[in-house]
Length: 411
Image 1 (cartoon, rainbow, N blue to C red):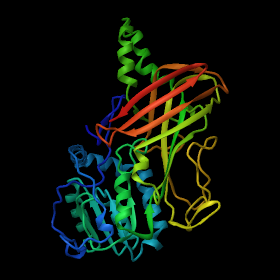
Image 2 (image 1 turned 180 degrees about the horizontal axis):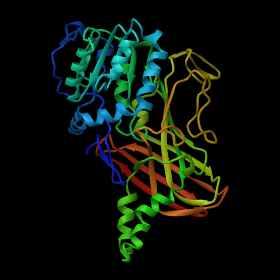
Image 3 (image 1 turned 180 degrees about the vertical axis):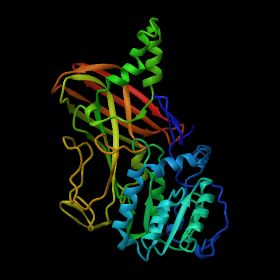
Image 4 (image 1 turned 90 degrees about the vertical axis):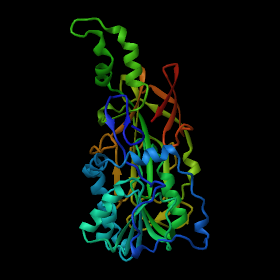
């Protein structure tokens, strides 16, 4: 399934939702949302929307299935964290205009309405927008929550918004390339000093050991009901480990402190920065164990907009966190320093599981590492030319005098 149910190497189907809306904008406009069919172009209206491709349309169509939205809503870590963040920022939301980019069934839009929003534009690409309208109507919020069926790049409203909220994160944070739609909405619709939720995101990586997984997928073939089927092993390795695998691991699988691959400030990041990301890494193993590959996970924060700049970097409104920027490539810390008031949604192995789980990039053959042995190399994540929502992965790694290269595509 395309980008809404990618088949990963562990054999499970892990659907993700379509955020951003299709070219086919259906559904009558609510009289209170003041939809523009034509008007003189203001400065922010002159931002050219990207073309909606066949791949985009297939991506949006894959999110019309209720099961994908059920999975996300039943992810209590995800849903409760978003609700807590909205309520934490309710003083900024009350009486103001919100845009929910990729609103799905409309649950986050409704949370914003409960927080006192004056008006919420719930922008959704997929056909689930029709059900979202019914959900809004059933909760007597039709005058406040306006469901717009169409890409955020294509909709037209006659006002700017005070808040943008979106659940844009894909596997490995950047899979699906939906953040580009949030950036577009920010540049076109958000008022100066407006609030973006989530405000910051960090992608981490760490080397892992996972003998059970390797045994399950590879060693199983050595003796199958007393039959030597080891000739299956090369194919089994290819099928199990060629592509990234979305699965749940624990902190016990992680060999070192994690490393920051990419830090994203949603207030300032530009779309072109996400087209290709490269970083060099170096780890020191904390134990003797077989190195089976690398795990990737992310967290997002829900901070207020920056209020000022200083020699120490950006400072944030109450409810924000750090005052010094976190530089890509930092390591030896599990997480950035945050204030007690910061709300964080984490997909780390040591935290409560989410539907994102972790993304594992396995080697075909493990490497035995000793305690304090150095593991180093580089990783490049780039948007696929085949489909910008896919993620190309180029991993170079060395340890114990041996060097390797692994290339994979997250489809």
